[in-house]
Image 1: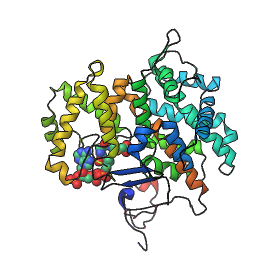
Image 2 (image 1 turned 45 degrees about the vertical axis):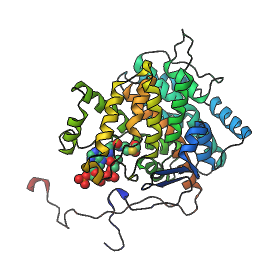
Image 3 (image 1 turned 180 degrees about the horizontal axis):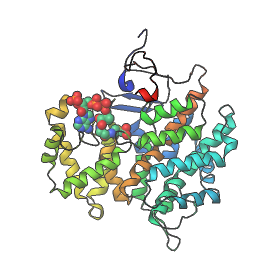
Image 4 (image 1 turned 180 degrees about the vertical axis):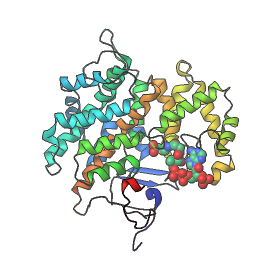
Length: 392
Ligand code: CMC
């Protein structure tokens, strides 16, 4: 087929140049703009990391304050958008609700959908970062049948999101600082991951010069699947099934190896990491800290630790170089924070937002970028003549 290269799942195809995130999958290294993920997770905040991912440098104090201020001021929704969130059925999965919210945002902000005006691109960036947590919380409130609160600008980004999700108009809500810090760290760990499925989707959609809102909503949709962001929900449901079945992790792993229990150990394996996912190592530390405290102690953590222990010493997993990925321990933390399982992938999306936007902007600013248009190897019928409908 001429110069077409066959590469299922783009496992070996680099489709762009990017200066945002570096991964060495064999060594388990992840850096945003050159900074190791371990340092950022320990010392930075999500908004600071969002700034870094988007603009290339860590912000000065003034830049950080100004960025945070702009984001907070854009967290409020048009009242008619608030009504939109009341229309979804209570049982709706919050991922399509988030995606629909982002598409609706583009209709309320048609004056920031230009792909060539830097001010409009900046407005859309801030709009998305400011409003996505409000969408996520309103989707949750709608599913609970609870009133939707207004954002409060004297709270931090994460505190505000926690209050919008868990607060009630009749009660004071004070988030636990340890939990707030854990959620902030989880968002940092998710902020970007180079050309993963959802980011490649954002780029592919954006390559047609679709606006940021439309491209990012497509990223949310791509993230929802169980092989990608949807895995964090699946991991917790898997741990719950093991627990309900008597808690025997060894038996479960045997069933996975015999391809009896679905085909996969959810939260294990990665296209790029053939070593321990550095994000999983950080999440595991936080899970250990938060979940071992008596108030949050969770028997599911014991099952997860045992599953990991078995898998890491088992030839099936060793031969295939399958290690825990970021989704393996995050669900346990999200659950301890109080989120229902179907919100887990939404939390991943909130964390990934800076990455999606940064990739859209990087591609949009690149004069060498082209519309994405993969080729195929045709395996269908050769030429044949049309048969009239009465003769088929
Ligand atoms: N459990 C059991 N076997 C597995 C697993 C798993 N989790 N993952 C891969 N394998 C096996 C697979 O069956 C295949 O074996 P064989 O050669 O005998 O057929 C081999 O390992 C290679 O698998 P692959 O499908 O070619 O690997 P991939 O790079 O296409 O898939 C993956 C990567 C992440 C989709 C896959 O490992 C998977 O489905 N994992 C479970 C879902 C999951 O945790 N996803 C989250 C990924 S990290 C964060 C994110 O992106 O959201």
